[in-house]
Image (cartoon, rainbow, N blue to C red; front, side):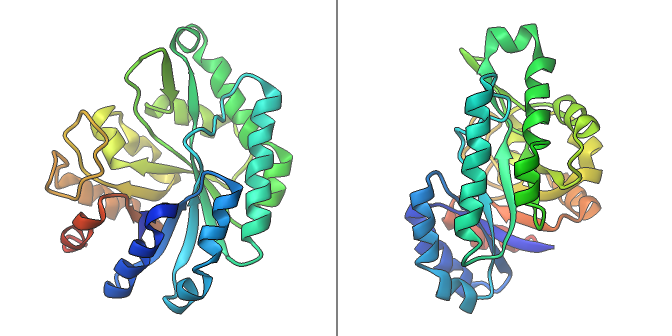
Length: 249
């Protein structure tokens, strides 16, 4: 199991400094929102290689795999393929991670299956599968507070449906501990598909990205980690909390 931390364009340098100081960390999951932001990562290529860090990409929150307008949904496929084309010139990207997306609450409540089928179609897209055939793709549980728009993927049934229907064997589950505290579901049923765990704590109400013991996350999470034995455990938390949290691993 590789232990990693999450980073964004504005704090990548701080993330690399943390990696220098703590040899337990061997991976960075980089959030990239625009193709232009790839240059932020490329600028640190030599330092990343020197630290022997592997890299993965957290795709934009705006990405919507269940988008009902096919033209727009396919534009996200093109976005990922173009990003991978640029990144692959300098990096060996291990995986891409995404949330499923969001739909108007009233429409989602009337026909959830329709939007899950859109996600299945997205993940089965031949162009995407061909482009990413040397790495894997993870879909992450999230939470929904039912405003005008609701997030899809806030319960195990959404993912069971997707995994039972997709033809792409390179799609796996990313279990987010913080999101599960806000919108709990029995994600143990997806242990067989879990390759990545995002680890953070919170108060059960807000996605605060706290370190362990600063919220309500129980010690049973370590049994789950042991049972799943994920390829990557990402400390998706405030940088000030990383050192204390690493003591538990």
